Image (tube, rainbow, N blue to C red; front, side):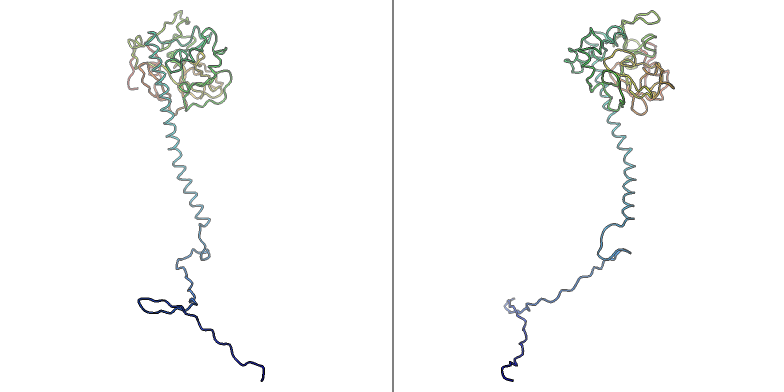
Length: 329
């Protein structure tokens, strides 16, 4: 049929590219062969589609429970390590105060009294007297010994936290009244501070006790010649750990259970009777460390006294002149 082409389309021949390898011409088809799909030979978990990775809910819960168990095992150890560090810092505080008291005694040949004047005046304490020996001379110079601790300009000072007077383990809680809480008290002995003789290392030397005896100032040399400086408390912990009342400890207020302590009540107590009115226990040494309280002795060494110590031995350590030299308690 005229005008109609009968030519069929020519087949497309694959194009070749040539390259020379080791002197030979090698031809390659330009059309690459189809690559085979790789099939993973890894086994799959039941119920999980092939190719899907990750944790199942059960596995995740197991991991979480293991982590929880490990944390519960580690937490007591971490807490114990932190308390050990706080206890060491507390001992260091007491050591510094002991050295300061020794410095005062070396200068004045006497230990400072528990308070300036009578404890009813509340004009300051031995903790004020040793400020220059704790590298706080400016604070000492600012203190006015003719007015009460709660009056200006002293009020500004008692509102200041002095780190060496605060145990890092002490829990303060609610605190009413002027002045920042502190953690330590001067050792006045084994008797009730306000009524009985001060037989401890530090005395309120202007007071006249119920026995009619006027207290005399003590010195480290005097104590060394009695029961011995290594067997007599100088300063101990007095925390806010009593139920109902908490505590009253303040470094600058010269009053029983504020800056003066004894062993007249229950040692390391957590309560002061059903109504919180056991005044002897108010002024008895205690701490927020587990198992006892720390003390610096008149010779400057620091020791931790266990809560379960025999009460007779505790009183002997507080008494400067009972004829008992206690060692290895």
